Length: 135
Image (cartoon, rainbow, N blue to C red; front, side):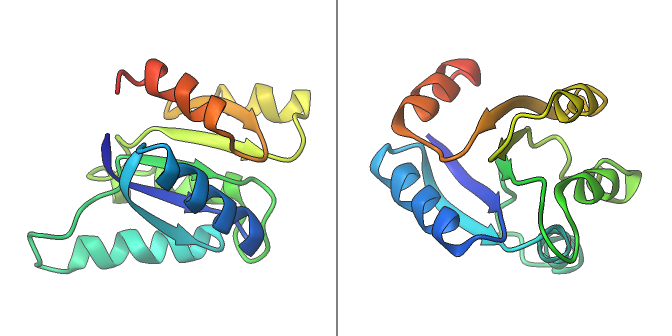
């Protein structure tokens, strides 16, 4: 079981569903959320500049691509930069409502993306991911 995961999505219903499915499946002890990439980067900046040694880093990120303010691709551009080296070992699962071949091709440019799945998250997806990331 993971200690903490981060779900980044602008849809509150999707976030609620993610929390419910993940909690029921014993996939993670803690689920934190962000409604866009900027909010997620703010979370990582808070972790980076806070001296609290008890703060946990997300071990996995579920990421939507199409969001206002800062979308998933822009988040990934920032997150994979050297400014976030201490965090960007966390693998990313793209959860998207569409599986556009161009998005699939673009995802291959980001080595931290370990899978590209269609929304909504399901119990079966989590079982598949448990095997994929050796939980």
